[in-house]
Length: 303
Length: 337
Image 1 (cartoon, helix red, strand yellow):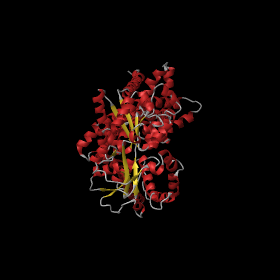
Image 2 (cartoon, each protein chain N blue to C red):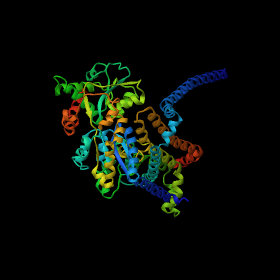
Image 3 (cartoon, rainbow over the protein chains, first blue to last red):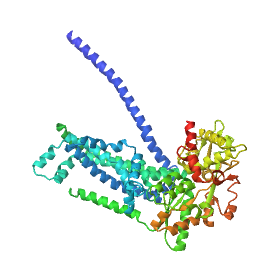
Image 4 (spheres, each protein chain N blue to C red):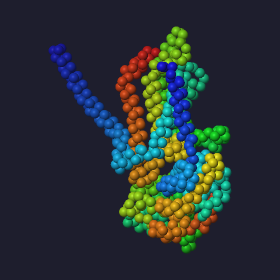
């Protein structure tokens, strides 16, 4: 009798779970479908449209567009600006993250908030501020002019604007990790007699390298894609101060069907740069995901 | 190996800097800061002049032209963009530069025809067959007609459009400033999209299919029809319109700094030469040279125009009255809200 009751209870429980899991499965599937739909409509479709438009007028137009001297100059300039802005931001990001996680000082909270400033300020404002400070009539304009230095409407202005907008990525990737890891290992190294650079390169850097690389990738993607801030400081000289995003806009404004196809050809180039960055990130996660998780896991006890 | 980190970063930075300066330091070059719908014209004129300059002097010359809304471009030159020459939509945008001491105040008397080597007029571009039956200015303010024209605050072309409408209204029998103002206010109520530049407005009308009529420069209208097929658009010439006179000037301060005065002056004079005038006409701007104009007479329909000087005095006055902050355009658009 007792056994019968037990059996019934188990059966009821099983049925209940099955029902719940069946409805759970439905909900699950619905959510996945919804997410896929959103990703498809909002992300994948526009990306495909870029490539479709790029080849809308055929290969010849595409080839002509991406081998145009002005377009090549734009690609070169974009890569140059990124080649300066990304290392600079890497150093700044590392320094800021180190300061914020390993030191106590007055104004620490303020610094933490300031790092996020470029995320909250519109890039157009960032560009205008550059003009205000470095433009001919700006604060340093007279001095720069007297020394024959051009910042606004020349490549240094593009670099400054790009550094500004891409500033937070490295620091924001590093801070949570470094906070979680604490400074025990650095302190141990110091007790064992290691110097500052030695600690940094042998202890700190190996522990944060994946987060650092991830931050650098994001920073690179943003540096190459920035439009608003560089648009203000560029002067839009084709072949001279047009980065790739600006060149896309300029070609697009040509207005003819060929111009629009050419603009999309350049846009697809830009998208490819972005996709390569994304791919590098995936590859990194896939190959070194274990290490990445490990470096986080190792830090857990101290968190 | 790990010690190399900082050195490597430094090397990258220095290399990039060196590359950047290499980009800057080039042989003889001219920068022409122009307004929006001249890109096709100067693309060809730049190449033609560089060839003729090479023939005359044996020197290579690289000419870069940047395009954008006239007011915005003028602003960039004021902020330090080192334009050797400016070729803008209206004299006011160059007057501002003169006020800043970048060129002589009498710049407009330095070249023939008030420094305007080419002109255009303000016309209407409508969809093929003119389904809304637009013939003249009054048709633009009929119910259900959507008009595309850029924002006069940022676009030089749009200011000419504004003044064309105003001048037409004021020159009607019994017309006066009040009636003109009422008409223009009515007109801007029919504008669904205010682009920042003339080319943007053309794209809105032509590529995105918005609106029933585009108020445009003749050059822009003819080119749009040419590029997209005469089977898609018609050009309508109103009974009376303005003669748009986009001026050109050498920026004294910049050419003296760059040592490019000779090339810059020759470049602008080239626009007045038969070869330059033929290029101007080819890109649908009305040439000043009468013999070139006669050759291209079939392209340009006869049109009755008034000039800015006849109707409004000069650009300084027109700018202050209509387009300055708090001016008539601002009052109209505020009242329209």
